[in-house]
Length: 111
Length: 115
Image (cartoon, rainbow over all chains, first blue to last red; front, side, top):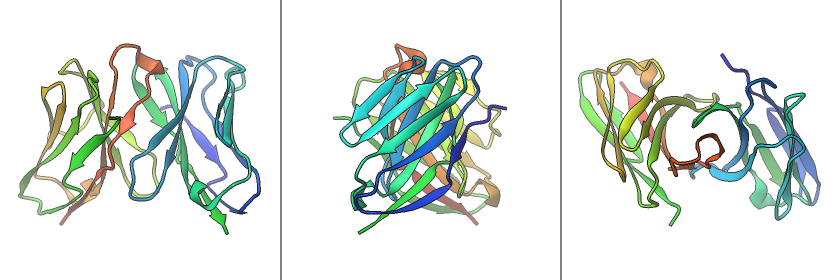
């Protein structure tokens, strides 16, 4: 059974704060690490797919880094806005097409 | 169009009913997936179809029966479910060519309640 862990489970920040959260995954048999953003009552939205150690990806105010040797990825949000409130899921891919998801970090950005 | 649609949005069924969940995409994707998500747990993979053929079945009970009638449609037939099968059922699709690097595009899910 693959263990994909995310921390913290939930996070409340003030509008304008920057924040980050962690995804830990097995460092062996690594193929890819996915990040998704999931707002309540909507579809999970793909943010990044990361495959190489040292990868850094950026989309607007959101960025992510990847360390496959130690098995972790960080997601950063700069200058959080209320519309960033969502659950952020990471998913580890250790074989073709199969994603193992973490339990997510629930972010609430207070105005 | 990067939309995956799922119907119905909500479903309530008894343990003796037969019902079906439907998923549709028009992105030309050739891989489609069913996931199950229980409250406060991560989504768990149930089935994967690749080029309309079942490629992965994650030891799902036979009361769940998937079907992929064509490259755009994925169904999940439900029969004799148990209350513990109540969950959010998510459908996803991906290109089907590059495997582990592929982004999976998700629908909004069907919220199922089994009484």
